[in-house]
Image (tube, rainbow, N blue to C red; front, side):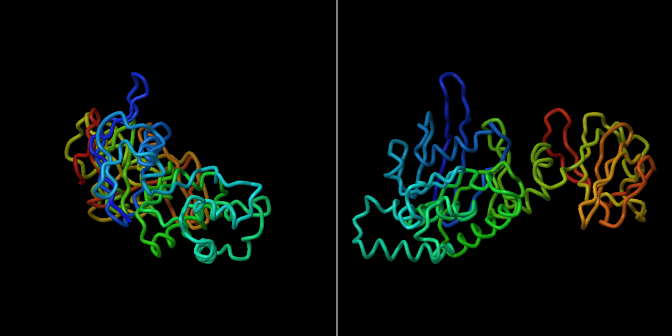
Length: 346
């Protein structure tokens, strides 16, 4: 295992700079998730760590060694791709063992590693089958097994679950997290899915337009977002953003600076149950309701602004009705409307 350090890391394609001198320290054994929308630079960053993209500037260290000029096979890392990248003509055993092809281990030692990897991943009964006879989740486990069998210093995952259906994604999230807890291998995981990031990461790195916006634990990013983008990207449903001007005259807000955005999470909007001492009380017209089983998402308009609140699953106000929402102290987030930087809570 090893730590991974990025210092002023840059990636340019001709005159276009895709990653702008980012700094990041990943501790030995840590599970770090790079998250952000398509084109934010997260996969490019991962591929620079892997050695699959040339580094245009800055320094990359794995452990104490600078690896900028090292070939991928010299970095002792293993990468799991979105499309599995396993060989259809090989058995599961042969696919897993392919990672040991150039190893100096004896045949018996290689077989022992393959058997142990298969056992850990629940693939023992499938070792002699070919990928065509496996489910999507099993194929992804084979791809992970091929990376695992080499005992790398770090695992790199590039959106490995995006080809799976929702149920399999949830199952594989748990399996990958359990695997990390057992192996304690440094892991860098790329995804655009904030639920994956929230449920799997020790730390999340939020990226946008080739920059790192914020780094922290899932709870820290959810409770203390540094900017509008992070506030809306982390958490489901997204945080509501309401211009302060739209809240003029509402209870609990002493000023109505038009250069401030007010953020409130849907779960913090208390609907039709006024709270004494609420810092904000607002009313809105219901436009639609989405029943999701344990909760209902209520879409409404407040002074023309779209707002989402949540209610228990067995409650759904009539479309067109007016509901009153209140917010308790400490649940409002203030942002500068021009810079989109956080100004604290209220």
